[in-house]
Length: 87
Image (cartoon, rainbow, N blue to C red; front, side):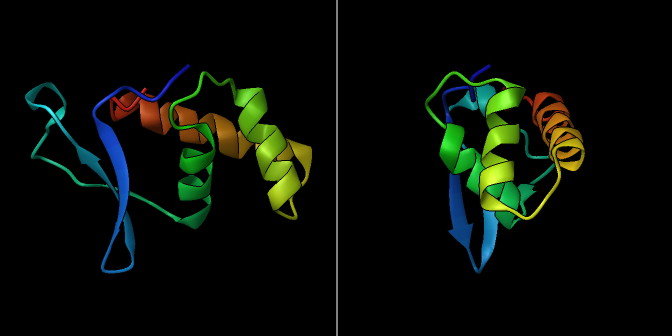
């Protein structure tokens, strides 16, 4: 998997917001915000090919979480990003 070109994470007024560049990526019907851990994952994988296992490993290293929880969280994050058209 890879984050599609044309998306950028910015912090605006303390919120992590995904900004779309290019008319094909713009959807004015919603704003995509990421919590701190999702923003950490974004920054770790942006511009790279990655798999869910890569995100699970990152979550296990960075957070006090067990493997089952990290796997469930990574799976949900990837599903959300797919639905939003980010990957």
